[in-house]
Length: 438
Image 1 (spheres, helix red, strand yellow):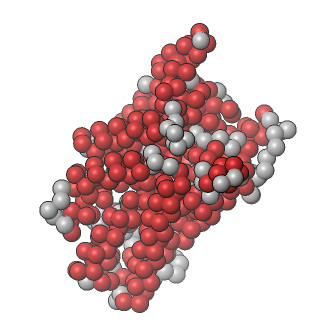
Image 2 (cartoon, one colour):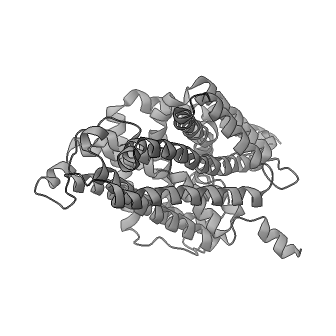
Image 3 (cartoon, helix red, strand yellow):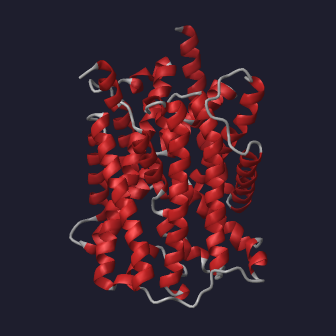
């Protein structure tokens, strides 16, 4: 094998990068949140508009991140961008959040959801045992080589998309249509500007989170200047279409009173479409679909840890790669945190305040597009944000609204999230002092 071919085989293709974005976005959120939305909003148009606005929000964020990713094509995500745009301390705090809970908690949540879905069909297996087995197996697989991990990611993401497409098509063909309209009515404007719509928006944006997944391993993507923006935009657009169609079929096939207040929306809708036996099969398939979500986060999270290890000597052990060029130490470090969350189930409380801090991080990153242009106008930008400055301003406006709303509605969780970030400050100053001394 030629050196050029060997190097290419050790890189992540555009297709795999798109799969990582799609898999990271489609997790438990879209299969659970509709049940809480229909309790106060029962207009088909307003409910779908909710998911449309969430998709526009994610696309605007992806457009802005694409510019930064193309201009600074290095792994690490917000850690790398905020360090360069603002100050290394701010970048470290963002990385600290990612390393400690940012990826580990969602991995644990997805694994536990997988365990619940699977054990509901096969009760002999304990949910927690299934969750532990999956996270360990997937983590070990991703320590082998990048080509194997990429192939695994592609297969399970395609299976997940196929599952969703089957659910949508069969819903239209087999389900009994419900008495709900999807065209706008005179009542919709008041619903769209109501408090319930605002509350639901927080959960919808959480369901769309993951649209920035490819930035965390930018250094390992083929031709990142072009393929990184493409992966973010194509992946986000695919998920936006799937989310709209999925929620349409949930509402089309299932009475609202059966959805209201329920968590297992996918299972309930499948029961309406296929019957009880079909719903059990769908439950198993959904659990397998969650494997791609776990895999994508196992693949991306350790890259943040690795870059921190490369930049700060005190953490250099976390940057260590195995003979296949994989940051195995960082993967095992993340696995240890995930196992702790799964065993203790403390990830549930972590996720309640995680949304606030992650939104704050992405807000500062998108704001950084404006600052980076002003500070470094001469920097080569292979991709420039489409619709600038309108699209990043849309993202900033919605993010600011979410931050204010969440802080007012959940001040304790928001302060706890800020406290988690603050815990990283003494760690940073100790590390920075050692760096200066060395």
